[in-house]
Length: 302
Image (cartoon, rainbow, N blue to C red; front, top):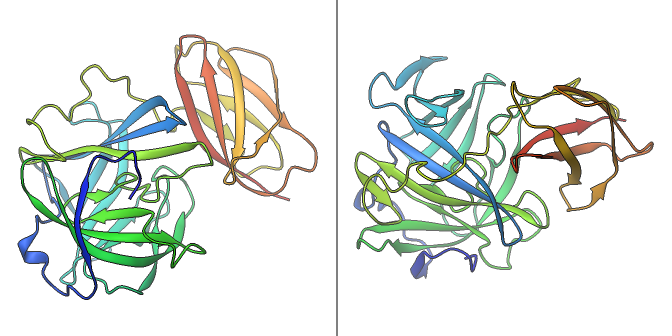
């Protein structure tokens, strides 16, 4: 488990089997998750996702899903999609932008299983999945004494080296509700900050302490890139009343940085990248004059 997490693994065993009934169920209403993002030791911001207290379920393609929104209840900035749990303790994510469903968690696997799961930004307009390998199955306890099932996972290519991240039954992933692997690049990563569901708080504390009080929410996806995908030339459309852009940084998944050449200022900025930049998915981060940091993902095509 990552050293930065304060959660405690009690025991790791193989072949626990179907014992999910003894652990907290995954919430189906009145819940909120906070994901915290860091660049090295530096806190960048937090994202919030929530299920409404009422009118939270919706029939989508013949299945009932509990709808997930970005932000906090009463301040939603858009529908992310929906979650549903089947009889075998698998959690599925309906992605609103792709109109498709992806496996998000499996809380009743066996050590050695592998599965392709959603592992990235829920605001993306394209699938972000990755193969995960089940390294261990154990239990975890929060400061209030509640016991949770903990599934240790490793990403493709790292199997056999021990768990890197964890799925916690009734909670989500240690990297966040959707960004379960946590790592966005070499230095940028996300962690699950906390989750409150029906007045039960994970990992511990009092209801109300998981809210956005005193925390500046990092508005994911609140600037637009057109076109996206592109071939290294695109236009940024900043949010209304956004501060001036002081700098831009572009990373690939391996943490390499690439040159960004902006032209112009104000709410609309033309951008070009170095000729010959490899095709793939990148993260573009904007540092604004008021200290805000905005970011989104872009796809570079050949």
